[in-house]
Length: 173
Image (cartoon, rainbow, N blue to C red):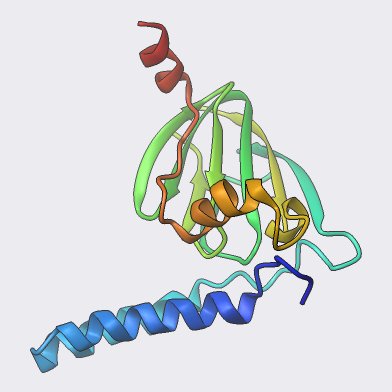
């Protein structure tokens, strides 16, 4: 693993440790079993398609809903994802929170985050789906931007901002 890289095995170990610590706080056996089943269910949504490689840690897909497909089912992967809405409207779910998105919106998806994309009513939507390995953005252990911003953003310790036309309206108004 390259210095400063986000090792997928470390991310998985972190998720497992977090889940185990949550389970240790719960004393009801039935609750523990239900939460454990949910944690195992999370693994079922892991997207198996490889979008990037070590030699080429970036990929982009131009997509159109419903022309190419009506939805991208709930899934997660190890890559960071940016969804840039170019035309129209659609629905994007991130960690089970659905939001209507419009042309000009940019949605940031952390590695390991459950998300889906779908058609909103009879609307169409064109978007660029940009996937990259997080380590592409980090130059090394002394990378100030990585230490102060990227690693906290990727770990979820700082909130992830959703750049949407609504947010722009809030800033303007």
